Amino acid sequence: MDHINKDISDLFAVYNQEPVLSIDKIPQSGSIRIYYRIRTARGSFIATYGINIKENLSFINFSRHFKTKDCPVPAIYAVNTEGTIYIQEDFGDISLLDRLEASGPSDEVYNLFRKSLKALAHLQIQGDKGMDYENWCLTSSEFGKQAIMSDLLYFKYYFLDTLQLPYDKEKLIADFEIFSAELGNTEYKYFMFRDFQSRNILIDNEEVHFIDYQGGMKGAMQYDVASMLWQAKAELNEAWKHGLLEYYMDCVETELGTTFNKKKFIQQYHGYVLIRLMQVLGAYGFRGLFERKAHFLVSIPLGLKNLRSFLHQYPMAKNIPEFDRILNLIVEDHIIERFIPPRANAETPLVVHINSFSYKKSIPPDTRGNGGGFVFDCRAILNPGRLEIFKNKTGRDKEVKDFLEQQTKMPEYLNSVFDLVDISVDDYINRGFESLMVNFGCTGGQHRSVYAADSLARHLKNKFGVTVDVHHIEQESKDWKN
Image 1 (cartoon, rainbow, N blue to C red):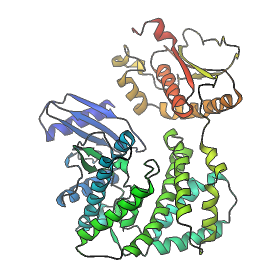
Image 2 (cartoon, rainbow, N blue to C red; image 1 turned 120 degrees about the vertical axis):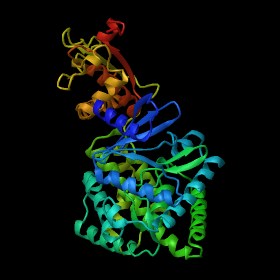
Image 3 (tube, rainbow, N blue to C red; image 1 turned 135 degrees about the vertical axis):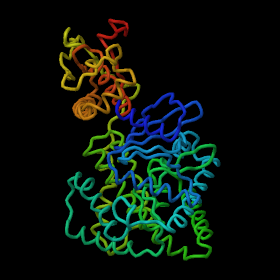
Image 4 (cartoon, helix red, strand yellow; image 1 turned 45 degrees about the horizontal axis):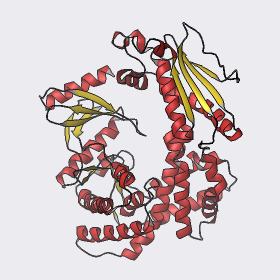
């Protein structure tokens, strides 16, 4: 982490001579890129660190190109010679999704969706002019039959196959071929954002700004609108979906300077809604079921319910029967319920007692009658306490948390812990048990075990809503003075 901060400071100094007040890591979501906010007396900037240089260059080249077309994207201020760090304009932390969740489907939020779609039509059509797809795109230069087929297979391997449902693989692949061939023949191909969702639209002074378009390519305009209007987390009502789609098509006509066949556009749009829903479920499966990231696991039921809503309104074509059968099967209640953990309520007796402790002392005993539970040894994780700068800090200090998250295997370690403890919590809630004990030990009970205990408590509250009782035995005995 220290070397990244220094590299960011050095790069910023080349662009701007203002003294840097702070460089703070921004919490990550699904990306492997790491974002930092640089603060000076006059303002703030975003620094991005990523080891995928081709992905970085895609974003940088797209951004610079879109700026020449007056699109609402961040300015790129500086890039290091290795292409691993770049500094860009800061639009803040409030996304369109945040605004929607905070105020609900208000007139103000609806207007922000309209602004976003108007800006999207401009970016797609004007941004297409002079775009060097061949050299700038991260993967495929065009979203055609082959790329559509890849998304369908992504869904098959990372989501469908994990359900272990019986299906005819040859017939399904044949249906995929038919479906991808039909969608690949759209005539409305311009720049395709690829991940145009309300989480990637930032709101600053009631204006919209776009981020995370590095996966873009030439493709169907309908895909981006489908991504936004059918985003599971947003849960837009049908009136909004229809009204916003009509408004977007009007914006497209304005940008094109001519009318176009809206009926045909909408027919193909429905196909792209479906392919987007498949791609999202594949991503949820990969990030949640394979990488074991809880945020994506809890999104699977939302994605399946979203797909079910679509299938009820727009039945599948009759020439792809196996595809139709399997999609209607995976949205049945018993499949969706697989991914919904039990939630504790006011009557749930279970309390999960979580402790951090020092192996120099002793493992905390369970005095509540169970006489068991879990004891996790954190000493295999690189010890922050060996570094002088961390000796007087704990696992609750930001610097220590950043170190454990970025320079150790603590994230992978905790994923395995969550998997084990989740099984017990799920079972104990259903069976009405009253107590479960989980202990985390490290050498001094100061850094690793404290961080792990707090992380598990947060995870269990978010996933199960269960009552947790956290004690940091060594730190509480010192009154947190080290």
